[in-house]
View 1: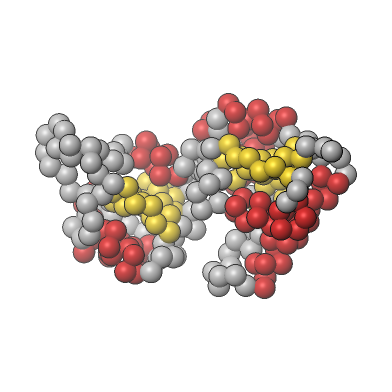
View 2: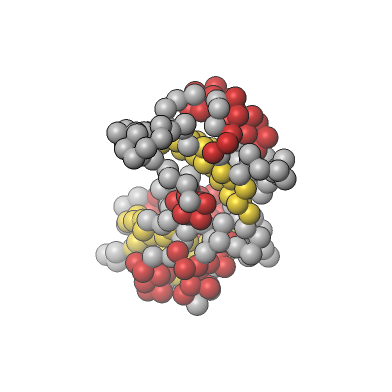
Length: 248
């Protein structure tokens, strides 16, 4: 029996130079490469990263990425159609298929739903699922803004902006750094929660990291945007004691 492998490949937030050597190799060696998109005629950021970094053209799989209603019929149908496209590629000769996903394939990634769908549609016995880690938006934003994510005993909380208000409040009133993903639509609410916890002065926002449209904004400075694109990341470190090793 053939060994069929579906590999989720993290391609980073946007800068093609942040693609790892292993990710580039896996994309070049794959028999077929797919990338998520919101429409069949719309190139995705992941697709563009893959082409710029490796010269490989990825095939688009359309997902209901803009659907905020949970597990809707539209979203379910998109998952199923994408899963069938992958299985069709296997049935026509591909042994190793790569799926390019922004950031890391195990962190809020479309790949997790694709892999579950492929297995559920008949790949359980003969499709092996693997992942290649990628650089995350919080790492990229920390580097670009000169923000230390964690020190000493500080925890790190990673939260989607769609989380309940109580979850955001609890995180901001805690002792560690808070990272909020997908914060564009709720940026105002998130900033208010950070300010209420005394974190506004050191909070940093990044949008479209690694792209010509990139913005890195500190809310304490004038000109803060009230809304932002979907791919918006916020880092809010806790108040830190002065001096080396203050968090130990």
